[in-house]
Length: 263
Image 1 (tube, helix red, strand yellow):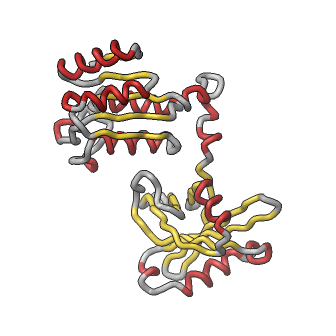
Image 2 (cartoon, one colour; image 1 turned 180 degrees about the vertical axis):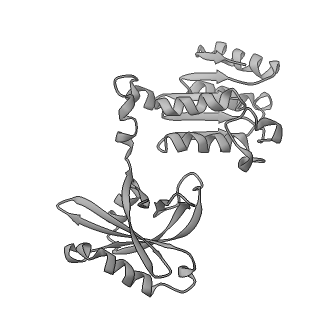
Image 3 (tube, one colour; image 1 turned 90 degrees about the vertical axis):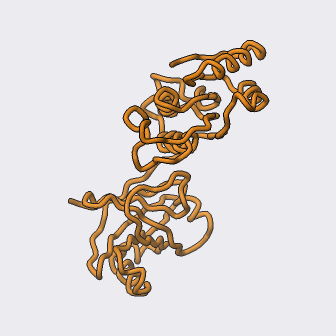
């Protein structure tokens, strides 16, 4: 089975624009599946998998044809500490504004070429939704979600999948063991603030979304609630107690804004 290396197009573009000929990054591998995600800059969401070094090298036409030799030479120059684990080496060639990449996995001197796939830019992320959803219109909308339990959290993710571009998340609670059976988050996120865990879930579906978080009890911060409702196109109340629902409703009525209540 051929290994696969995923490269993020915006990272690659930023590297190329920097004028550097070489830079180090990091790769994360799904063990046993030979799938590697490589990063030049640290992503918004903590990567999944086992980490290893990654090096990006810009090469000319001749070296691109001999990229395997270049990768072995680069590997030989690396420290013994770095070579204790497999290393991903990506050779990049640009000709007439067209960017080409070849990727290699080097482990203890053994080298194998991997297939390269690109994580697309923003404009391409929701191409399959075009014609079904007005993704351009949704991108400009802002949704406030108060309460990020088993109701609010999946609503947030579904809206992100639909292409909503701006979110405000509000909840003071943390992921607890009793949440796991029904929540979108798993045991690896126990103890995390729900606003942060759900923010990551949104960004995994739409890495270009803008997400504000408030880990507060909104009943004690009605001024912040009112500010957030005023800024939003839609408020979703997914809390599980009456005081918060009453306060959200009062704020919606005062401001003449649209709200949805679910439970």
